[in-house]
Image 1 (tube, rainbow, N blue to C red):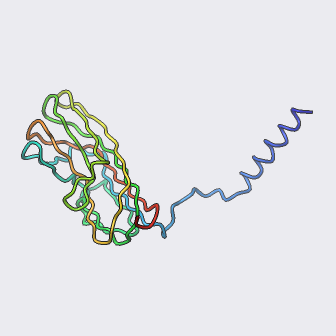
Image 2 (image 1 turned 180 degrees about the horizontal axis):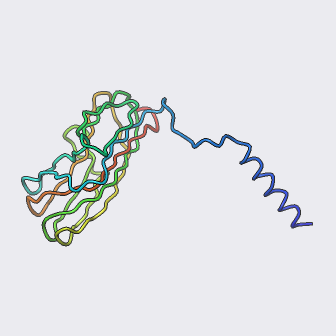
Image 3 (image 1 turned 60 degrees about the vertical axis):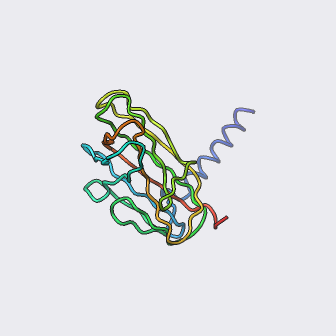
Length: 177
């Protein structure tokens, strides 16, 4: 009797799932969000001309790059401008290499010229040509007109970061706090 009861519940759940809308869930066009990315690059060079300084990650203007924007504009080269204020969750991922040995990098989301320290992520690239991956996240209270960029710093030397992939997602989760 117990097996029949469990089988009946499983069958009901399967029928309910099968009868529902089979389309993939999408965020919709009403929730403010932004995504910018590039991938499959040979090397997008972020020109680091001095140690311990921040440089914008770019490379979005080339092939195999894209954007999805609602509540933002994009300049085509890595700067998002907020048009819908609110509390947003920001996440980013990237893979990159260095021409140096044991280069110490940090990546952060910026609002204007201010690093959002809660989004900072650190990575040491151990040897020349080694590819390292990083991911970071944080919540940002954004206002209309705020400019969002992601930047990288090499704290050891003025050696470039050579990006292969990059993705930034920002999704509004509430009104301003």
